Each structure stands twice: as C-alpha cells, then as structure tokens.
Length: 247
Image: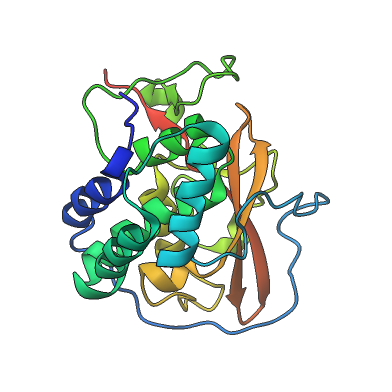
C-alpha cells in the first residue's frame, strides 16, 4: 500500500525513527583519489530534481509548498512557518533516529519529481505487509519491483564485500530493497585494503550525488554515490526498488 503523507510527512518521519533504531555504526576509513573506473563507459547521467540541495526545514517546506501548488500533492496542510518549526524539531531536537528518518523522507521529497514517485520512495522506507509490487514490464507504475526469492538471491551486488568487485552503471546498478538498504550496502562494503569509507548512515548518505533518472532492468529511479577509497573513487549506482516476493 502506497502511503500518502498529508501533514503526514512528519508522521512518516516519526514512524521511521523507530524503525531506524540501531543503524550500524562503522569505523571511519578510506581516503580520496581519482575515479577508478568501476562504472564502465557510462557517465553519471543527468542528475534530477534536488541533487545538491540539502535536507533542511527551509528546503523541505519550500518543496512541499511547490508540490502542492504545482501538482496538488497535498502532502502537508501546515503553513510554511509551522512546517519549518516541525521539521526543525524532527531534524535537530528529537535525537539521531528521528533525524535519520526525517533525512530519508526529505530526500524522497527533494529527489523525485512527481507525487507518485515520492509516494513510491517513501513506501520503501517502511516494511508493509500489504506492500504492492509491480512487474518489471509495468514501467508506468510507481512501485518497487517484486522478484521471486531465487532471482532476488542472485541480484546484482548481493554478497559483494568490496566496492572494486562490483561494476555498476545506470543500466546495471546494485539492486536493494528500500532506501535504508542502500546505506546498509554502502556501510558493509570495503575498499581494497579492508578500510570502510563511511563511519555511519549520515556519512554514507553524504556521498550521494543525486538520482540520475530511470535505469536498471526495470527503469526505476537510480541513485548515484561517489565512494572515496585509497585506491580511488568509485561511482556506485543503486536501484532501491527491487524487493523479494513472499513465498
């Protein structure tokens, strides 16, 4: 079930704060360097909508107002000043879990163009027994793609332990189920010397360049990350909309 967010974006944030409890903390590591070319011949693609725009009370509330005025999304009924106050509390006053959850929802708002795409993004943030999936061929439907378990277990990036072992492009991204799973994958992989380039969830998220539009086998929105390692910087493309079907 795809969720609508009305005054609601903040409700989703509070829900996500509970779910994000205990996000793994990783030791810092890695360094800088030139790109090492693991992304093949394909360039980064056009970065869409809000890449480079940070999640702040001002940016999120301006985006909510824009979505309501231009597309009638009705994600929030709060006046902009009250919206900013609420987002300030969510980001700065309610603790690290609330901040992480709010950052996730904020990125969905800033990085997607349509109401439907935002809803699909937020739907991946929370486990939902009634989650509806789409078939790969249904490219006009905003929902994660559901794969049989046998296919899911063979998805691109599954079991990878080093960034250098995975060649990713916009058309051949790492495949995970949900936005939090992107961070888990980035936190789990290592550089060639065994170091981890990210110390925690927020640090990994800061490596996000933006989304590069539809890609992958099923034309979901693809995110691009620049991962610094001592041997060079990896361009990692991730599709967060590939999920296993319940058997």
